[in-house]
Image 1 (cartoon, rainbow, N blue to C red):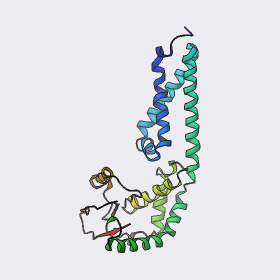
Image 2 (cartoon, rainbow, N blue to C red):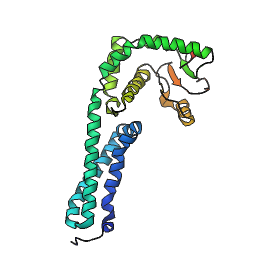
Image 3 (cartoon, helix red, strand yellow):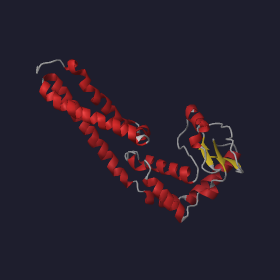
Image 4 (spheres, one colour):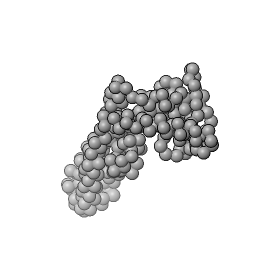
Length: 240
């Protein structure tokens, strides 16, 4: 086989690397997006990643037979892919320190502070000093955690994406935890950052973000329309 053949002649050899590297980099550049991409649809993404890796290995083997500049480019891309995988593992493995039980106990210790915050927020909103948080039901009555709920939270955390979120952004693990606490367990969904108009509309329209009971909390960074709920829930409006 011609050792000096043009790299462009085998352009399709570069496809697995051009797809694999961005897939890996997504986890570093966008912690939420990259994590959701892989773990929200694991059958699709894992199969895709497996196919790309197998394809890349076959291309690497074939490149040694072709030689020349093509071989150098393929070897370089292979090295980059391996380094990306190593870095991915090095980042993800320490995230196991995001211990579910430890977080649950930490949050239980914070429940008094949460109750104080809710009381302050309700007063602040009444005085027109804060953005609005709309709550169906009473947050204060639902933040207490009994032992059964603690076990439920720990179980949910262990199955969650929390342990897969980059540990060099320490706040993300706590955000993941709060999402679970206020989501599947209590029916709350809390956003810790200002929401865009698109995000706000998505939240208000999405049936997936409906409360599991008559309780739901949506943090909105501007004037929000009260959310209509069914049932016998008693609605109250508070602020952050």
